Image (cartoon, rainbow, N blue to C red; front, top):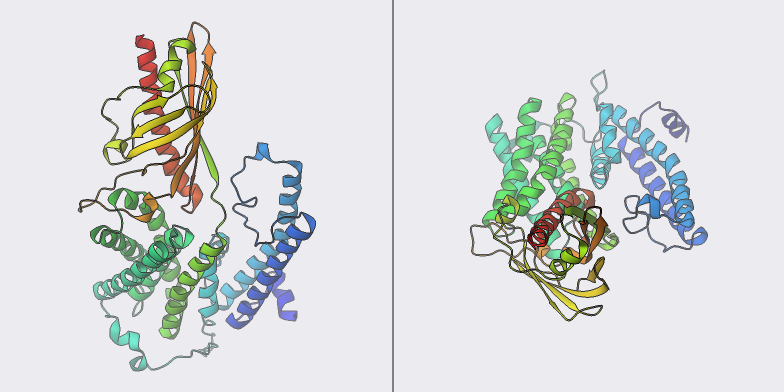
Length: 466
């Protein structure tokens, strides 16, 4: 406890066993406090608190109730001291391993912080100035290590070995996440790229230190090869791989930077097999836990508006239904993203059924509000596929094309303006079950905004022509 007091004052160091013990103990205590506070005080479900979606859904600050505010403030108040403890423990472990203090930033990255914790639990104490290792791994004759014989000593050879190892491991983990767990989550899009970059650079620098520039190149090579393999084996199409590429390459680069930072102290690579093995074992375990604890996907809202040089009475008929739209010119739709073709309606008033035909199928939209010529609001009972993948094969059908991007409903709102003009606003409410949700929302919001513009501009042109 005396050692812990020094650590919490920003002093001292922690070996890996003490760090692991304190880390697990404080994590269990934190989860117990969260559950007790949520269930006993605020009468909420007794599950682990999710700081990314604390209410289990996406909620704008302006729509929070006083009870929600009180709950969130209480949970943040409980979290602050544990954040301080976590940072102090991490810094103490980094000092013991003679690693750069900036690596404490990984403590704040969701999912990666679990891998970082495993890494720190495996990392031995740094060599003492007197030359005696405090690690239980201890230096061993290089001839006794299997990796010395398997990893080539040349730069190109070790880079190839790292890419081959991570390609195989990353491919198996991706299959486990997609085909076994049906999960497009943090583990797939952040954990796997980070681990691939980390392990490939750890392999690349096994025999000799490498430059940061070359390490980043090796780190980014691994997920790029995995993407090509998924395309070649009909696991994914080109469009989705390109969407995932920025996040995957960024995380792989972060993993490579972490492995590169080890070169300053890792003159003996005895711990490398254990670190690699535990990181690769932590990933499927983390993905399994993520699958069991996944929150309900948040509901997102996208609104797009245009001004129409026609009164609402002239615009309304084109909102309810519209004829065949011209072929798309936008690169996004020509690349395979689903786009609207026409809209048909059966009946009128609430209860009528609108059928909005897209290039991949039809949305079935029962009318909820029919307030001519001001508001047409509908739910969505059936969703077509969000895109047609680019692929060297006739067709690929990855699981995310079925139910991973779902429209919940939509509306057209017509607001009269001066001079006989109309402000026409289209809104879509939708969910997707791909994480990190904020990253994938950048793509989905943009796609829905372009779909809105295609429809609204056509309605405006037809209304103004009349």
